[in-house]
Each structure stands twice: as C-alpha cells, then as structure tokens.
Image (cartoon, rainbow, N blue to C red; front, side, top):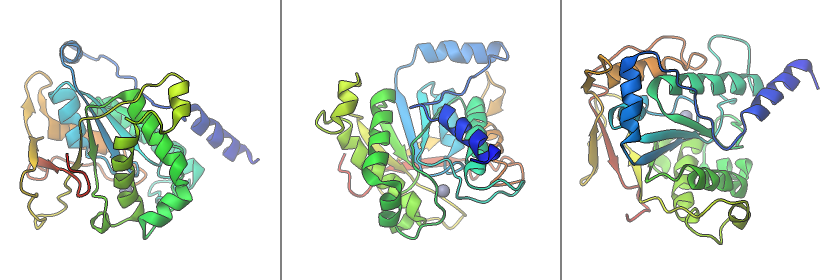
Length: 279
Ligand SMILES: [Zn+2]
C-alpha cells in the first residue's frame, strides 16, 4: 500500500468511531456561561445529509448555541468524491481533509459530528444507485446506530426524499433518515446493536429543513415550523448568522472563499414533515 494511502487509511480508521465530538475549547467567560446554560436544557437534534458542506450551519449554530440543545450533524459520507479547489488530494486523501474541515466547523457552531461507513463515489443520478453502492443495509445500520447512540428528540434532514433533492446522494440521505427513524425504535432491527448494549430509540419527529437557494425559492409548505436563525446573541456578541458563516468557511476544499454574512439568506429556516412521514 502506498505510504500516502496507508496514512489516509489510518486517519480514516481513527475517525471511524460511532461519533466524533469536536473538542470545544472554552475561550472566554461568555462561552463558559453558554456551556453552563446547556446543562440546564434538555433536548437534542440530529441533522442528517450526505456530504461535508451540505449542513445548514445557521441551523446548527442556532440550535446548539442559541437554543442550548445537544445538536449533531450526521454526514453519510466524508466527501471524497467531491472536488478539491485548493490542493491535489482526491479520494481518500480528500475525505481525510474534509473530515477535519467538518470537525473545525463543529468547533465553531458547537454541534457534534458523526459519519457512516459510506464512501462518496462521486455524482449519482438516482437514490437507488446510491443506496446500492453504499450497501443499503450497512449504511442504514450505521444511521440506526447513530440514532441509538445520540438519542435525538428530532431528526432534521437537509433534503427531501425525492427528486427535488437533485443529487442521488442527497435523496438517499433523506430516505435513510426516514427509514432509520422507524428502525432505530424496533428492537428486531439490527439486533446485534441491542446485544452490544444499545437500546432502541424512538425520535419524536423527522423534519425536512427546506432549502432556499436564491430569492425565487418556493414558499415553505403550509404548517411548516419556522426557526429564526438570524438573531443576535448578546452574550457571544455576534449573530448566529455570523457564527454560521465562520463555520461554513471551514469547508475550504469545496469552496475556496470565505463566507460573509448575508442577513436575508439566514433570516429563516422553515422545517416541514417529509412527504412519507405522517408525524
Ligand atoms: Zn451534497
């Protein structure tokens, strides 16, 4: 095995644990107060999508540092099939770098980070192809294990479970979230996890975080919940939109520029039930 690939494999193996919590240094009294506030708040949200940089960092920052909820992002892949705008690494090497970019982003927005064992094989036109190449049962088991480990009250998908998601990986990520929502609560599904000590877990809701790319995005469906992610936090001295922009700017391989605050873009984050989930 070439030396570089061996190092990349070791890095990935070391980070293939069920979950990775970005180490959050306490840098000042305001952040210490934030962490104390979190001790008094119950509630957790698992955000789920397909790739590094799919996640809505404004939602993660608002839920984690604004609402003091335990918040995590489950990225189905590590993004090795994507582009690298700042260096020659692709495949395993890029996946290792993007893993670290995600952890750096989480250190800023306060969420935790999880992965599955699925490999990003590049663009896919269909969810069926994605689930076949990812090995559906294996990646579903990984998502179920994450849910049973993190035990979220709410699961939030970045994409809808249909063609509106575009990329097959995106559609498949929402399909997996919905399937795992039920499977994690069923002790007959993936019983080896139960035998290993995990308990079934029924999250209360699975919601889709509408994407609004551009000003002409369709309005959210009737009955959607709306989360204001544009507020200013006097304790931190900044808005969650600013925090989100800084977090998103850690994705340097996929976007070589730094993000700056666009208040309109971060004003709202509507969430509604995915089509096939009636709760
Ligand atoms: Zn993506």
